[in-house]
Image (cartoon, rainbow, N blue to C red; front, top):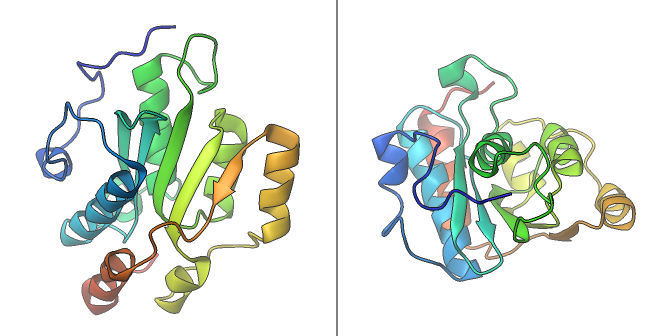
Length: 188
């Protein structure tokens, strides 16, 4: 299995690629999360939800981007994490992101995954997930995240080998997309 970097096979909107300071660079874990925050903030400005995600290699090379497009695409499944996973699968040419020949891939998401995204992570083959803002942060502005509990994340690790790092780089930048969304976003 050959990872198609560069060039990318997924076509991203200019505003989304514009979030990346350099599309050919590698980034540290904190910088990748910062990019997920920037995607979330830019997405709110584009009329989307306050969520952003990136799939990257362990070495920090981004594989795919995801922005929440539920309202824009009239698609209740178009959450940022799912969009990043879908795009990574297209980039890698497989439905399983732990397929032989692929480097270990990680998901960076600006907010703790909801129950739907948890299910997508379960089946995706990703082995590491970093999330920043909390489920409670999303629910404070009106989102219903579903019954995602610490016990579910423990089950994901014991049954699928996925390591989950909650609250990673949760700072003012993690909360800014929610603040902007609370003023003008369309809740779904």
